[in-house]
Image (cartoon, rainbow, N blue to C red; front, side):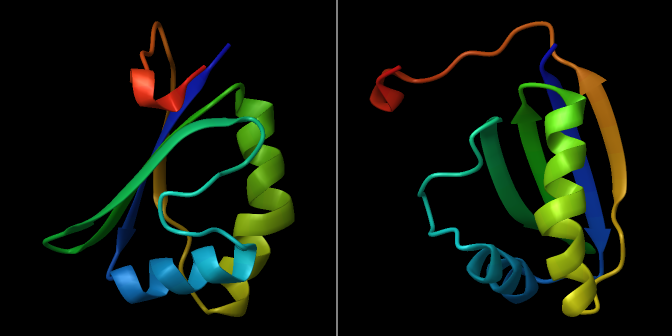
Length: 98
């Protein structure tokens, strides 16, 4: 079952987000993880919000354990407040060509 993951990083910056992405090997508007269906990030008045949709919670947890967690720790970033919800439905635009 697909899950939505909403992460709030209080005090984090877009520069820190860009550093994490760079260390993982992501490019802006590029490809994400194989089991990641959608991702966006935005600054908030108090930090950063990242929202993903993953094929499963296990896929997300594997990503955290093998990539996001180690890189975030290396950069000294605090763990986010996270909410994980089962996704009832999602849509994608025709430009994705799936």
